[in-house]
Length: 166
Image (cartoon, rainbow, N blue to C red; front, side, top):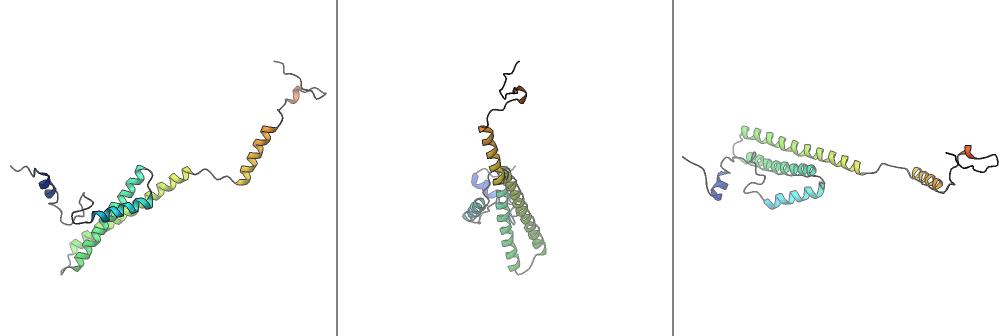
């Protein structure tokens, strides 16, 4: 009875057993791909989009992964066209994955921009014209400096205020 690999090295090797083209791999950066280049892409997109919430960060991460995988598909397409014989089945698979990754990238970007617009709209105070703001300030100053309001029913015919009787 086989129980599979037991060492870390054996497990790492067996995790790559089913990888024929890497398009469905759960690993974003595959062996042979440049991790530094991936990190550069990640840093660039995070700096460009500046996510402020966990959801915005997830969307940028989705864009990064989709773009990285789309580049992988394009490299495989180039290799397929450079080979002596074209494999229509492989080209169809590559086209399907390219379309899926492009759609994922653009949908994530669209959603991210929408969330950021909504967040920024909530953060901005409503527009108040300078004229209206100035009129409100003058009204407030007038109210603060005006003499106390007297009830006209409590003023006698000589213009002297009578005390209120409870």
